[in-house]
Length: 403
Image (tube, rainbow, N blue to C red; front, side, top):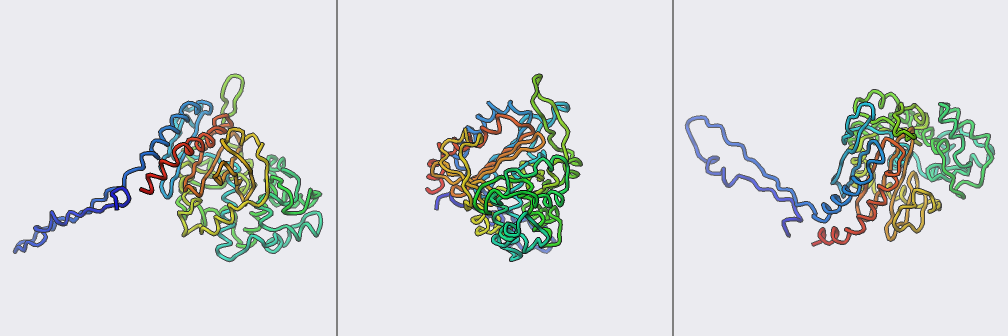
């Protein structure tokens, strides 16, 4: 087997052997035996991809005050970098530990957390919501009884598009908002139509809390953040406000960027948009999503979440720069996109002046996450730019790996 295909351990035992076997009447401290670990060389074509992608980012990252990017290949973070500034007032630089709000990229955490509960036989994706949340009601008994967990996570509840999202921004509690859903007429049967939700999606919080008798926040920390080593991740307003190394949101005006305050909005729907994380945290998250933390996330769970459940549109503005989009679906907490011959698992997020994107190609064992502290044209180009660049290098990367 060639050198680049294995880790080689060289022990200095041969050099030290004579010393180890000398007998003496005086006490002599024996020299420590040291093992030298030589890492396998980096795939040069992967390095070329990273260099080219970083160069692309350098040309467009000025369109946001600050950003951070991580790329994971296999079980390794191969690129992680901060760009720009956290605050136009303080002018301090973004680094790989700077915390951002990730908006709707939080939805993937809710679905994976649910999957972990399925792994533990606490519930099933096909369970009805009322099986675990018996006080839940929709307008009709038939709709209430038909709605299951898979419908909630796949955005196919039968509720109107973005129902009561305005109440989230008004600071209304989740209990009150979920109760208000029973006043709505359905647009179709559960599982029939794609209709994106924030309040409706956050029904999963209540299901998990009722089933486990723990808060959603504690479940996230205990079952995902801590075991995946996401050391600075959280899901509440207090945590991000107390963090020293955090980005602040910005909006673009006629005279340039204006800094805004971090808002408590959407922490009342944590499953829909309440997660805070650094790009280092998101690198650990990507390792799990790529199947390299089977102790936490089983492959069967990931396969279920990434299976298309309901057809969506490909003409959304966030697909306009994608290289080869054919079809798009919603899985459970994730968009599933046919991009050329690739199945890309993807989600975007926006909240309170923060924007985010995450994408992975499971078959290629590679993923990327981009976090920014503004809504900007850069964020829309970051993922399709990576997909295009990877497509150019994939054959060389894979051929080198299989030599």
